[in-house]
Image 1 (cartoon, rainbow, N blue to C red):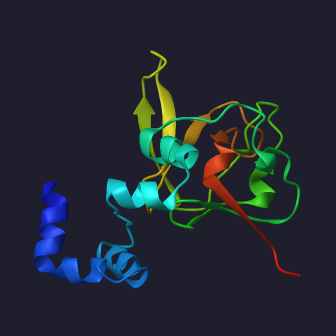
Image 2: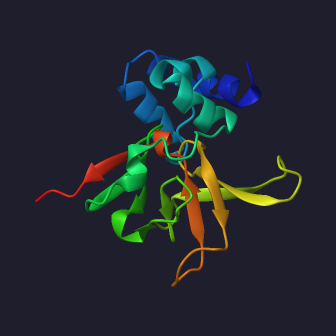
Length: 162
């Protein structure tokens, strides 16, 4: 058990964890809206592909996500915690085979530097649950010039009502 988990249990989080659904949300709220779950809980909530991408920083094969071709108006959410990440108006067809966006909702992601392919890349994660979503590149369209290249398997599309 890591130190953070031990402290959360010691200060009363243990009782919250026993309540399905409510416990997870209440615990997340106590930590400044961060969702912190055990590895076992992530494995229970996610498919093996989603787990591999979100928790092990994996990727899906290009051109396999139906969300790459999604054209409706709506919002793309993190599959791990349902946090809204991208409105559909930021989406564009990059031709890469992954859903791509030129911007992200304010505060929705955090970035780190990834050296897995030797050269540095900017990797981004959901700011709420820490789940890996993809990489951001400087070859996108105006107005930002950025391309958030996202794994479609870890997005949930929520169409606009109406």
